[in-house]
Length: 261
Image (cartoon, rainbow, N blue to C red):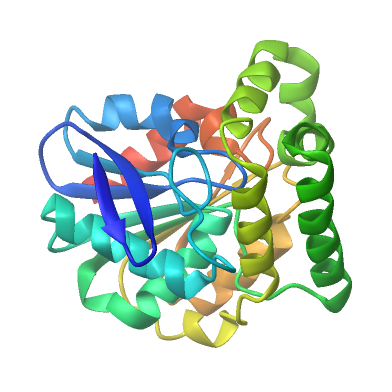
């Protein structure tokens, strides 16, 4: 499905019937990261899977892909799909977007699932690295960038034992354009500090973190856990930053238990 949002087209998929569940994928992949989790969930829920602005099949639009633009895109998808109120799950940048979505559209959120993400903004060093990477991907193309990202995003167990998963992850990432990756990188470099937002979250919240995630380690998720009242935290074994992709059975089980409650 396709919907116009501001200056670009957002592509999304809908699976199943039931209460609405919106899944936001990590950078620099697309909605297929969630496929093996979405499939069993779609037997009970109506699962909405957008490609984020600038990633997968969705266009980058003009300029920087800010968190505000992403949040508005998610809202447009909800309007187009007839979603009044839903559970929202976000992996990595998906979590950054959900903090912004909460600030703008909290009445739409019945519960949150935050996966391998963080509330804190980039350090100045991280920001400079992102901006340099954005420039570099436009000069050299997507493949060198993605080859450099794979060892950081996938856990050691996945890299060592599942070469098929590594190949599949690369194929997902290669569907994103250099222009889209650059726009999204620049948007993440400018994202605000969402730590003050955490104490305002008053819906049921589940936190999932891959035990081998070196991009947003457990300490970042612990900070969210301490500040979101009543939140639950689960660790996903043998998984890195892409835990829904690397260990879909474990992520599905944790989500299903949370959603039942």
